[in-house]
Amino acid sequence: MTTSDDQPPIDGAALLDTVHDALTRYVVLPSPQAADAVTLWIAATHAQPAWPHAPRLVIRGPEKRCGKSRLLDVTEATCHTPFITVNSSPAAVYRSITDDPPTLLVDEADTIFGAKAEGNEDLRGLLNAGHQRNRPAKRYDANANRVESIPTFAMAALAGIGAMPDTIEDRAVVIRMRRRAPGETVAPFRYKRDRPPLRQLAADLAAWLRADLATLEAAEPAMPVEDRAADTWEPLVVVADHAGGHWPDRARVAVLALTAEAEGNGEMSTRLRLLTDCRAAFDTDTALPTAVLLDRLKTDAEAPWNDYGPNGLTAMKLGTILREYEIRSSNIRFLDGTQAKGYQRADFTDAWARYCPQPAPAEGENAPDGGGSRPSRPSLVIAGQRGTA
Image (cartoon, rainbow, N blue to C red; front, side, top):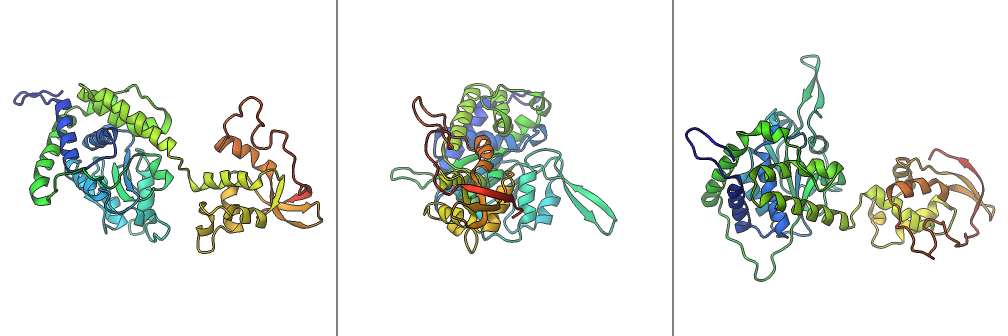
């Protein structure tokens, strides 16, 4: 709560309630916790100078007409200094970020990160780097003959169809929108009529939070999550604690609900998906030719490998990804006398244990990753030389 000599104190909890009511007037959120999270994210944009991390807000849906753009409209009207990046050049976006940055808003973000996106490398780099303070972009100014440091730190909301890259979603509050069901109604949003009252809410949020930036910066809230999730959600929890009332409890419930939803959604990066699918492809084999491994990966109709690039997953792309886990192909001679480039199961076991471990087996069951009594197939390697492909 903030006081002033000539104005009554601002009731932060009541102000957040008002923002929440305005948000849910125009948008059907997927859960009460999602509505609380968006409310707190909007409020946190008004205190960006206090935060060491700038959490992203990812607004995604499986199809059109799920309310993504409407939620972005309401976010734009209530956040701090909105900067719409539709058709904005990367240079213009970079130059707009200052020590007190605007809030970046990106609609149709799938066109930036999708498989067919082209020419957006600089903007993708900014959105990746700008989550943490003091991660400037470096550019050489030929006219001045010097290297410039360009700030990237800014909160950003991105709306689009489907998942965003894991480098974005790992640093984001993710809201999975869906089409309204029969009986779910919202008030129509008219820019000219409805935006001015929402901008007044933005002014009220700024007046409340800007007066206490030092307090917000020094806050060390008890967090129900750890590591990167704690970095992402901390600004929202600090705002909730600063407001008081029912908001501290609601914020932490939202943290647990949305992080559990992300963990239980079954989504993983392309790299981890490949590593996991390789384990299934090996089955009980101790070595496989690269061609056989690729064929087995592509037999799963629900896997992405047939459509991974114009020609599907290739030996070169497979090798490039696996090298990140220190897994490399080698020249292998098999028991039938053939020799081919391939992969040995033993080279995967460390990566499997570190990045995609299987649950421990119940008593009496065989251990995962070939640790039980299952016999190996007769395709065992009898000699091999390490390759570089």
